Length: 331
Image (tube, rainbow, N blue to C red; front, side, top):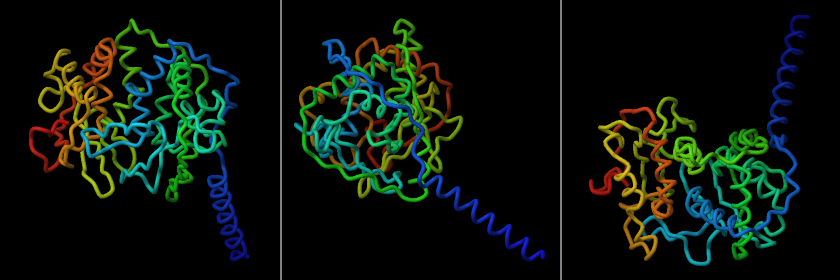
């Protein structure tokens, strides 16, 4: 009798485990229907959308083909938004950014504006798939309605480019687990730009500063080390770089800086952005979007500084370019 009980219990456990596996394997992401909306491409929206795309959120950095033989990998002419392999070693598998040009066969040409808004802020594709969360929709869920409308309006103006991009090949079990990341965002009010601290937090969130400048362990940010640097970025077959400590620690962060120095640092490569980056070797490789951030408006730089300088000081000495000459160790 006891053997039967044990046998039935074992079958029950196997059945429960199987049901749980099936749920995780076949489930779709939490989602809401896309907005039934056609976004009016006003001049103001197009200007704001381009600024978000090219500067604040650096959408072009991930979704464009770039020339990494030159400093900071400027976008190759005619290849903005076409999608590209993302060869970071931290990705568990193979991942390509999507073609987000309006091409009808390989891009977003057959997507509605509401489906684009949902993908940006909620991480759900047109066909209902969860997008891999390297796409920072967990940050973009806080993007205001007006800003996301502006971004979509600008996306609609990109020249359509035919470029078929493979679907993700993410390793198990991450391939199942990330389906649970998306969730509906609802409506998001515009931030008060007059409140520099609030607006600075908004910009820092859109730019993903915390994600890049916080060390990770086992795929998760280390609690209590926000903005302290040390996040490792490594390209398959390429160089390794670490993010800098941007907390207010005076010895290992930017606590000794003032607004002027912060402004000058972000604008340091403005000439490269305007006139072309020089060719560089792997020792000067960087994923920090210096070219993009050199375009930030004065108002936005001040707001970012107001938020960053108030972050708690954390002592964490980081060598951002292991093995590289000291003069570029802060890039």
